[in-house]
Length: 111
Image (cartoon, rainbow, N blue to C red):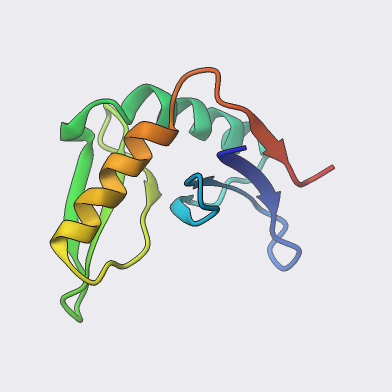
């Protein structure tokens, strides 16, 4: 199941992550106060991932490429890991597009 919802035992906040078919996390969410927020975030990923202009390609202070996926209002939905090259980052963007399809199953790790 590509999407997982989980709760931080430390903060009590909810998060989601999107995994590739190999199990690697390709997109991680911001913190949400309620599980419904994380669920809405997943729907936002499904809606926005097909639009390439919603992916903001960035570079860390160390020069490592990464990306954020943004909603139509410009708010960040999720962030990628750091990549070793821009080409690897572009593969990550494509992986998010491929794995964030409508009617995607969600594994709820909070129950």
